[in-house]
Length: 125
Image (cartoon, rainbow, N blue to C red):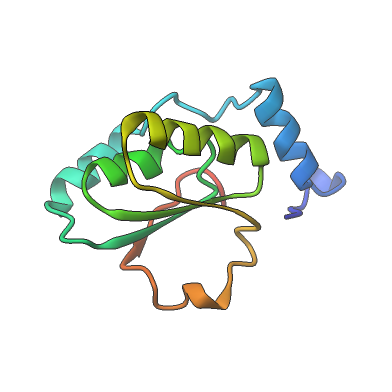
């Protein structure tokens, strides 16, 4: 995954994201799901086996919040360290969570029509 850098800087690469997770320089990470998501989950009510996609899931706070609420969750991130941490958090919490390491800008065609909703808060901003 390569996104344009600010003000014409070189593109941000998977290696850049991986380094941020390894160094724990993830200033956007709130340490848990944002209050907005918790309000959305309250309003949505019971999951009824709905499927949700969380692209750019990072450590998985949002993905895990959906899983706790009963959703079937697929979380995608390009950083191996973030994916490993997300899997470990899901396992410790006893939650089912499909974690895929990959480019959120090039999701597989098999994702077409597979999800009832997608939640993205900080990845594509």
